[in-house]
Length: 223
Image (cartoon, rainbow, N blue to C red; front, side, top):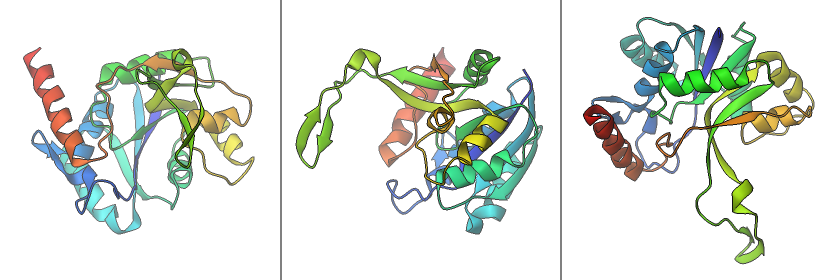
């Protein structure tokens, strides 16, 4: 299926420390470069839009130019909130379906992208996710207020494939932010499906995550 992609790389990396996590080295290349390579290798990709913080446009463009040499890409300025950055990226796209991906998830593969795309075809969208294995509690302050049924809980990941115009229509309903793109589509009563991406599709949030990602990559090479 033909699609465009938006890679969100405009975050502040506040939990990672003083370094920017997207330019941190992971197995010989910047974290962001792994996502770029995966999407570049995904069949059906049209336009690849990278949304960066205003002060990092030139840096990200140089990084993309070094590591993404086949795909047609552009780097644009993001917004304060995630939804602002996603919307900016979607408005640069023309495909009916668009894959939205967090640049801090470097373990994404072309195979995973293809599976989520296949699941989204003919539907409002599909997201990569994994079933929750921990017991989850709802907490207010330091007090437990709810005990959700773990069998019905999934942890959302990216990529998330959406109908481009449906996302834009949903965003126009109100100016509040959403935590992900499936939640945005739900404003219009549109339901996305999930694709089990497994635990390897982790997000780089703290320095320790780089060590875990490096171990996963070593195992992939061995396999």
